[in-house]
Length: 211
Image (cartoon, rainbow, N blue to C red; front, side):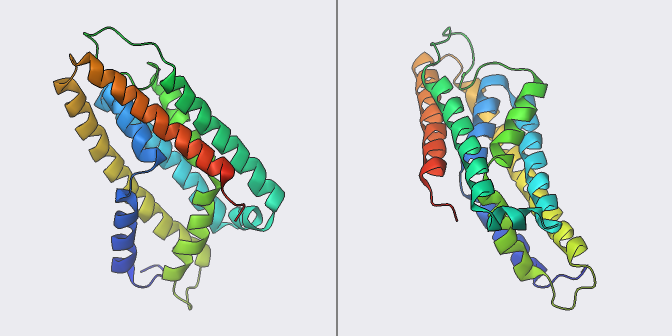
C-alpha cells in the first residue's frame, strides 16, 4: 500500500513503541491528572503536532541534515534538554495545593499553552527525528514510486496510533485523579514523581551522546 511493505509489522512495532512510557506519556498523564481529560487531550494533540513536524522533516530530508550536522543536533538537544529540565524543576518546587483540589502536577494553563508545551516537549527532542530516519525507511518498498509519500503515509499511521494511545492515557489519568482528588499526600507525590521524571528526561537528553 502506497509503496510500503510489512505494514502489519510496522503497525505492531509502532504500537509496542508507543506503549513504552516516556516524556510524552508523563506530560499527558500529568495534564490529565491536574486539569482533566480535556486538557490531557489537548496535550496529546500538541505532542501529535510535534510528531508530525518530525515526520515532515524526515520525509523531505530536513532531519537528514540534523543527523549529519553535529552542531545542529547539539543545539536542538540542548534546547530540548533545558526545556524538559525547566518543566521538571517547576513541578518539583511547586507549592502544595489545597486538599480539596484535584492532582496538580503542572501549573493550571490554558489549552493554547498546553498545546504548545506538548508540541515543544516532542519537537525539541532530536532523538525523535533520528528515530523516524532509522525506523520508517525499513518499511518502504525498494520499488516505491514516491518515497516521500510512502514515508508520510507511514508517519501519519504511526502518529495516529500514538494519538490514540495518548488519549487512552489521558482518560485513565483523569479518572484516577477524580477518584483520588481528596488525597493531598498523593497529589504531592504525583507532583514530585512527574517533576522527577521530567528532570531525568532533561538531564538524560543533555548528557546523551550526539548520535
